[in-house]
Image (tube, rainbow, N blue to C red):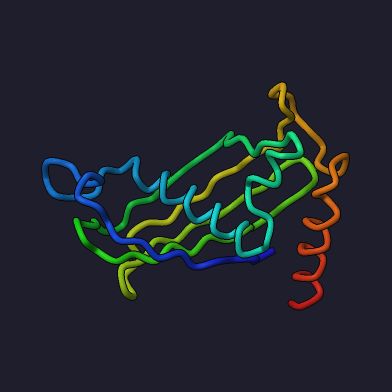
Length: 141
């Protein structure tokens, strides 16, 4: 699918461990930052999903660490939507310091309603905009 966004951030001291290296779980937090920014760039911030009673629950997450990151490093997170249906979405992530790939990962999500049950996003008003963005991107490739 290939819709993507670039997010920049700087490693905070609190994100490092006793060895001065970024603690591994922070990459998953940064993936969430990347997803949020991607949807914001598409003019579909998470708040719009929530206002309609939808959530996007993580059901799978993975990260492969290639090089360490340290305090004050400036990072670029490339977040891409690899696949999206009316019930689920798969995202990929690449974290860089300059041109150096530090980590790569993926997350898989399902749409859920307010009660926490699986939801078909086609039943919600936001689907019209989301589907149009997906279709527009497919036609541009």
